[in-house]
Image (cartoon, rainbow, N blue to C red; front, side, top):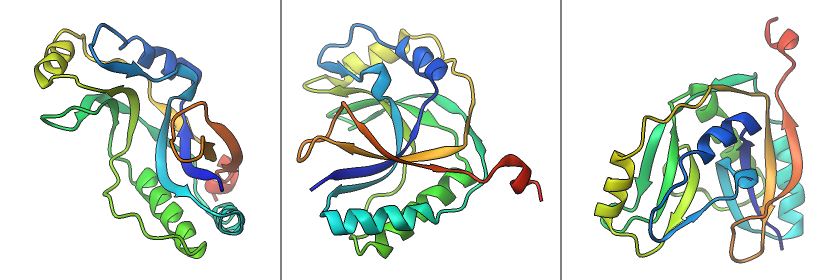
Length: 184
């Protein structure tokens, strides 16, 4: 039973820029640079039949290449911080790709996603990290400088069954329409 999700893989140069954020933050388990990605839709542990139907539905997703820009750092969890992330600027093509992933999930008879889509790249998972430590860490950092990048494919990835986390396996790649086709 694979544990699947769709994601945008981050170019190596941008991952290297994001890796510069690493620092002394108690309780932080930093993401491996090669595993950094932007999750579009998490599907969870699903059966092989549903996985095959999902791949078929994802293969029909039609999208044009688009650009993404990282906006800065943020934290999920409020008073109990659980993740440090790089935020992504709002981009309608990304939102459309997320909606298409949701439609593919429905076509494979998977339950709907109940959480709002908040595009981000997880940089570290936090455990027993006090909010004031996170605030001090963030205030001591220079502004995040990362180059915008073009998205011309998305990937169906799998993680270890039942627990998530890397290393991730790239199961399938789904490409955007060629630029010359999109211009017509």
